[in-house]
Image 1 (cartoon, helix red, strand yellow):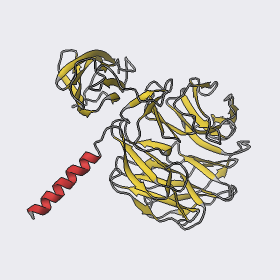
Image 2 (cartoon, helix red, strand yellow):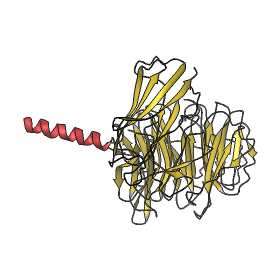
Image 3 (cartoon, helix red, strand yellow):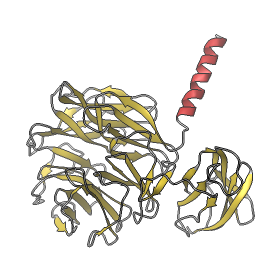
Length: 453
């Protein structure tokens, strides 16, 4: 009995260590699986959809986890054994009710939307007014949703029981959807297409994107500030567009980290978001999309999307370069960890300890704090160790400790953490606060910040 308890104890310790790694780390690897999209309904329950490649054909697959990605199991669907079908996107409006879009690889005029009302235990095929390749699904509220596809925007007002065709005038494929309110939303597609509605989809107007590249993903940090991403079909160019006036104008954001296609963008706060793309691209912004920073990845995947259950915990999915090889699901518990340069794919190792000024400042309710950890050989501070025990502590203006937001080992690199201003007792009030960086017990620097509620 004691031996069994010891085995169980060490298994738990090992599991906790695995899921406490800095940066992005692999939590699932599967041969011949291509992950296309993921979605979590809470901290523990999530879905990953895509396809399984076998014998030169692809079969649609849905994976589910109920323990934050520790284990994944396949869900059975009515199209599971259909050759050359692929699940493209998954979206849940509550813990039980979810939707998956489906496309047929051999014919763009064949597509499906699947629905579940019991957490994926049973999926059924929805009745649609068209039979086109379906790509994306999104719900601004629990009853109203939109789905895109080949020359298609569909709308439902009864939680997916019925779908009606919207008059979009789209000449080709439509992909990503983002709504900033129940009536105001955006859709992107081929040939630089950006559509906007302000009346819940009754009318769609085309916005001037000033690009002819394919746009695959779009998301808004707030009602006015949004980002659209994409690239060329041959994977030799990419593009990041940004608006700060609700889509009236779009400006291209310089990015030199890669020329590969960018698939999706997702914001978790007005300042913080991620862009996911092929050629190992996981890039992050902490200033509302004005600048983007590459993050380190353990694979060389073609990534497609990410989903965050908090500002720090997120998942991304994709497959090896070239369809039909290994598929991966990655996870982070520290916001993706290390930066490997701004708009660059060259790893930059700091030469000094640096505690950066938080952004935004003043802030409400969340702010971002960056800090640099030097290597032993690069350090000009006389530091004589490899990994560093880092503590980042928040203090009140009176010097009282409010919260320790970082207390762990870090390897050399550039890091960041978000502070949601909750504290240990959830009674954080407006005022002046200080934050201090410690390395192996020694104070590095202290800076001041202001919380305005």
